[in-house]
Image (cartoon, rainbow, N blue to C red):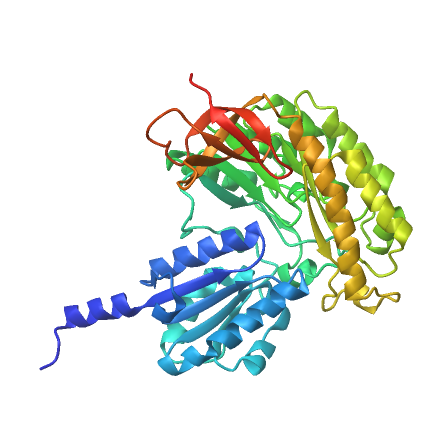
Amino acid sequence: MAAPAQSRRYTEIVTKTFYIETFGCQMNAHDSEKVIGTLEHEGYMRVEDEADAGLILYNTCSIRDKAEQKVFHRLNEYKKLQGEGKKFAVLGCVAQQEGEKIFDRAPYVSLVSGSASYRNLPEMLVRLEAGESRITGLDDRQTEETFDTEFTSRTNPHRGYITIVEGCDKFCAYCVVPYTRGKERSRASNSVLSEGRRMADAGFTEIQLLGQNVNSYRDPSGKMSFAELLAAVGEIAGIRRVRFTTSHPRDFTRDIVQAIDAVPTLCDHVHLPVQSGSTAILKAMSREYTRDWYLERIAWIKGAKREISMTSDIIVGFPGETEQDLEDTATLLEEVGYDAVFCFKYSPRPNTPAITMADSIPDEEKARRLQVLLERQREVQRKSYARHLGQVMEVMVEGHNHARNQVVGRSSQNKTVNFTTAQPILPAMGNYLPVRITQTFPNSLVGEAVTV
């Protein structure tokens, strides 16, 4: 006897399951939130194990070669699940970069989509469910509709992302982003502020503005500069912290520092990737600034009324980099006094000018140079973090380390703080507490909650 129609529909909804794995940066993490929200709106249920999923999605990054290799390695690992009727999708930058070649390399993949096409996911899912096996969404990197977040499923109930810039027009010699994310385009300020207010109404207290070059923001409506938008988001009722990443030094203006000084909710942290401390290498990278020009921006930050934490990105082993260039970078670490640096070995990327440059450096030499910089930076951070000993700072609770009976949180300067509290019940996530720092390490702080 056939099952009633209502039962069949219930079974269909329950069995539409998906698993998603995200590679790469915060923008990819936020893109995954959009994908998750769309899938759930279309009747899919998220599961935490790929073995339980009917649809397995990989949201990919192609900034470095290893991130790309990891995606294909993961696909190869799980191709054995193909026989169980599962379907696979590759999303994001590797999808945009490799396009339909992914179908040749991994024939069991059924859907390939770049980030600008996520609003078309409902239509692509219908085609997938109808049995199509080679579905693509790759040709729409110029649209501003990529900012639509109608179905975003935010993974953190207290901190949320808002993308205000997509794409990049800088064309640095090593970078694949302009080829995978398309031209630079900004979201209208009224749209950004509307989403910020909705987030505040939903209980979010921290907002992070995102963009490949977030401070390259150009309001399509002409109403606000990036610094003015920062200040306006910081003035939304209920918002206690506003962060932004990633900045490009070429577009870092003094009014950004002035906004941080003027609006208390703007976090005292700036991530300003330098990539190299050598002017010669910066020129080869097509960064279009010099070491001295970058240090002028650092001087603005150091001259702020409040202490602003500084972090950066460094590429080691760019073609033609000499020992003197390496030393120039090492001395820059010490001169700036970064609180954290994310160092990476240069990785050749498809379509980029650097891939054809002479004087390539062997991987083992890149590894040695990377270690040199990491050791120099560790000493910088040891001294940098030590200055917080005895200070009281506000910490947002992010989790608990029950084994040590500690609370794990983050300061406005984006530093990890592990602390204890005299209260018998650990504070809930999302709470803000004053903490006195009692011990410092090169990458974290330890303290005790202060009784108010």
